[in-house]
Length: 343
Image (spheres, rainbow, N blue to C red):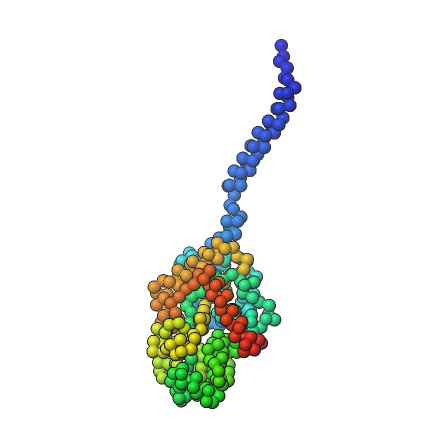
């Protein structure tokens, strides 16, 4: 005799079967997803099968280029993948900066630049290129202080002598270009002093600027320490003060501005590494850690010291804060000295 199914039991069976079927489908989907490579994870990792390119904003042979090549060589070992250097000078770094800003944000295209890239956004606002909008700071290494030098024929053997002389008669000072760090340093530390009369003479780089001081074509010069050291040690020029908190190991007898009674400048020439602003934070952090670790290797520190660079490396967070502080300083200097459009 057939046993009939109650209407209530018949009503429960379809929902029960539907729930079981849904659970099975969900489980199979979850297993499939877990077996697939994570798209997010892949996007937050530097592709190991690609070459990392360091795009340098200066021509080969300069200080930033030398630092970039040393870092690239050590990163190749540290990261386990090829790291090369490409030079794209011009427009205070904006040409290279735009290239990196528009590159795929996977950590394989890295900008290597210095202070002019930051300063230029104040001098040339019409370029519409701002680091904070276009790039993500990764790290900075090998900072260099600015040193103020004079011709041996100038009767100023100290900063006090120089300030006194500049109040007595007009002096010319050479820099590495209008709107450069060496120029703004003089504007910040010297020409802002009451009663000083100093005329700016821009040159296309440290070598011609310092050569002009050696030849006494200009009385005063401003440049980073590395190119000035051999000329100071040979007696061809005399250094009167360095714009840093501590004396330079390369010029230990030269006092700081602070020691000479003038408030010093909390800014150094840096070699900075940047990636596209769209780069995921894990990639930025990975590159930052690798670059800082490489910069702190004993042989790298020794090499930097021999070239006149200071023994310091800043990670992404610290470098970002330093850039913000420096931008505020230069914004004030550029405004007071009416330097917009200077370069």
